[in-house]
Length: 334
Image 1 (cartoon, rainbow, N blue to C red):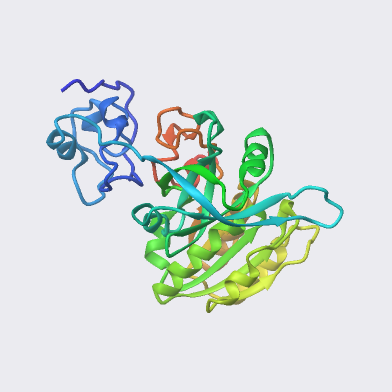
Image 2: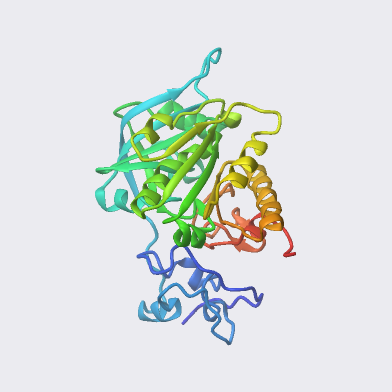
């Protein structure tokens, strides 16, 4: 076995890909597996157990990584631009892509995302995009236009055209254990800006589990709420937040003080995650209780396979590893 030994010890964590058809991946052969200490060259088995032994899977596969996600062509069914009054160009756009069923069905989990780029461009043009909805092989995405890559994607994303897609990936949400543990309970989601894209799939998951859901929606930096109509088709209590000087933190604190929630989900920027953590800290100090917490990942993604290192957070590969909130925010444990 020609596995490269990594001499730098670090804790094993649960991997989003463990147990999937993509495990063991190239990180196993490179001595960088996030879940298996043995594949990192350590003597003791201290694994992020996920129901199977990654080490044994690697040996059974003749010490060869499984093939990664394949690139496919996807046709664009519909496009909707999100244009604010006074703007000449859209700030974001919503796409409906037609993907092969065997790929589309695996994009239906909360936190799923894809890599997408225009045909004829190199992989450096890949844009990581969260999956907003999946229905009958149709995958709905929303893309914010921010720079050269997303502008090129916007110019190429015409109805009837094709895009190149690599999928599925599942690390768009962290705190996944809390989501699995408490999604059958009372759930509060705070979603702003492009964080709204994570909510429809999340809402369907919670409804399927028998949970109840309230969503506080705000336009955020994007300036528009664009999922309200989609949520109306679901048994979800939706409240639209106005722009406030305190960024609606007072309203969130009021909601948490007045209603007992089992799980809080932050779908927004990292500054929102940090602010909500502070509110939950104070709630715990006052009541001795603390709901679970799940948050949207805003980590930089390039390859989404743990190879390039752009997603590193607290020494962990955030595109693969299920990290803690302390690790994600770069905080020391109290």
